[in-house]
Amino acid sequence: MLQSIPSQYMLVGSTVAVVFMGIMMMFIRARSAKKPASARKIIIPPIAMSTGALMFCFEYFRVPWPQVFEVVIVGVIFSTVLIATSKFHIVDGEVYLKPSKAFFFILIGLLIIRTVVKVYLSNTIHLGELGGIFFLLAYSMIAPWRIAMLIQYKKLEKQLHLQQQP
Image (cartoon, rainbow, N blue to C red; front, side, top):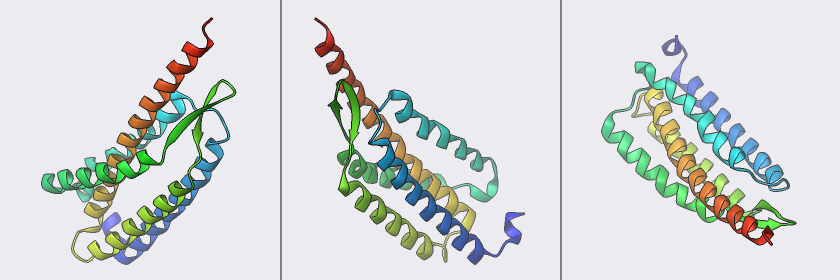
């Protein structure tokens, strides 16, 4: 079914979808900074995103193992930038995500890098495999970032509970 769609349409469609999701993520991040954080809000995105791994049930999206390792390493490296810009603080007895102006520029930069690399690689790598590669890249960025956020959150939550005890 997917093979009947011309690859240039798939490339444009997937690129537009990624840019749209990136913009939505910026708005969600801006709104979430106005509400107290919770462990649940931190761990749900990577859990929900993990269902995307079902794409690998189909041969069209499978990625060779050497590329899997390369992509995961790049994703973990990119996650360090996200980790560095995600900090929590305590306000009025609750833990909040501290807004970072750098986060938006970093996210835009990552989207631009991802789009340029995707367009460049679309000439040499099968589009389904490329989709699998970019899913792995995104997940290997988000999972370590959210784990680091959860660790930071739990430390502040523990500190908050210690402060509230008489």
